[in-house]
Image (cartoon, rainbow, N blue to C red; front, top):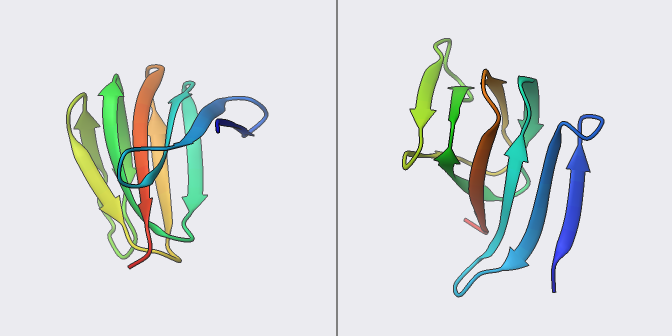
Length: 95
């Protein structure tokens, strides 16, 4: 079953689904700055574009391009800057 999600006044949209192994979502982020919180361990892969990410407990920003992945632990907050519309795949795990 597919689940439509929309955040930040429609600037971030995703479709949630059950992948072969884990719950997942695939989506697109418009240009902007966003802050997300997690309830599960998340693995985010950039499909197209780039995400500039400030992970929890860090002061620095790192850019992830298409094909690159980063992870965020459950119950954390992370910041994103998007300078070009970017597509992503995110999987969720209980850890």
